[in-house]
Length: 139
Image (cartoon, rainbow, N blue to C red; front, side, top):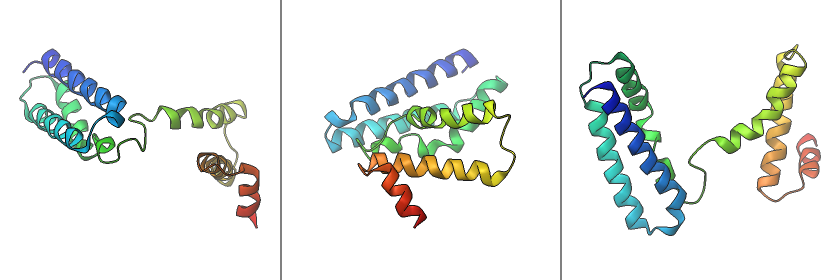
């Protein structure tokens, strides 16, 4: 398989995986299991496909290393997002803070800010008052 074909096939399979993740709440458990099996077989075939392209082989190796994590969304339907975009958005204020202040001067400072953000976000996700949660954590 040449590089362009292999890359296109990966793109198509990942597109199907994201389609499944987007609509997963509307499927029965048996349908999810069936779709997961089909995708796993298709990805397995792509991972062993012979290619003469170094870039395609590198991509195969990266996907092979993460293969057991790719369809985790099927094991926990409706409990998470298929992408990490939400997490990335939550990290953005920390990145801006670090860039504006020319990085942290001490590791404890970076860890403390990360801990505060994690505590506040977890409290929000659980419907708790973030400020009370911080007070409870410090107590």
